[in-house]
Length: 368
Image (cartoon, rainbow, N blue to C red):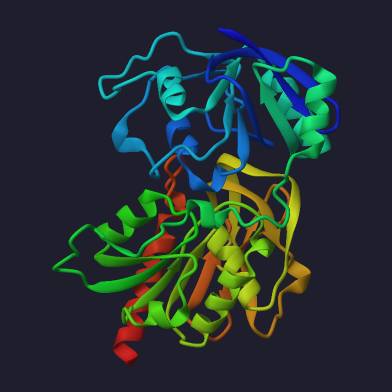
């Protein structure tokens, strides 16, 4: 295994060994607090442009299973762990984590003090970094990290979105109760699986589809998926969603989709210091007072002071830092949340949100 150096833009460096991949890899260094689910995390398109540090010390012990992937590829730019397991013990596993990363050309680093990495990011904030197995000069690598492209203002969603429309499940759903138009900003497969289970035929559109193209599918509802990057860097998607708001379709947005809908309703977004990533974030439903534990993966948030109280209300709040975790339109059947009710990985507490979306479509059908 090769020596590797992680160099951050603030001049901090960490050393480790590369258990997969070689060369130089750039991204924003972030941390995730989940104990399991590394395969789903790696294939979550929301991590496009980021290098993930897992806070749990031992990663890779149950290998890789094809059924658990969440997209067409690994979108994370790298993985940093304390120790990569030497053994993958799982009857469903088809390969090891190192083999999986190596095959995808993604760097994996272990023998790193991930506690020190996490504390540094928590104190200083997520920042640009480079991981190298070739250039081992710390001063040179820090300069490269500083010169690299960050996430602010970047449209990373278009790199992860589908290029062509498609129907899920493949071939359509003969007994579908609802037809849902989905804007793919970097969707996780489990969102489509759940909608399918709840009786929906999903017509998935690329993020550059027009409102006219989407409405031509005659949907019963609109779903806005998760995705990567700066929500303020995709005004074209926001403009499309704004046009779709006028159609008064029942609408449900998740994470990046929450930020898209929030901006379409007039709100603004901002970058969090180190974001929320993991499967243990406490969320309070302000309508009922109930607290749920949810899976998170985002580095940007809707600014509560920019929300027009005549248009929308805050429906959910993150109890760790009191950031906006959900919005609901005051008069139209539209709502969104900043977290991931589809889990994969994570708790299933917020599954009810999908059922609320189904209920909105059911009520809307009765009216029209």
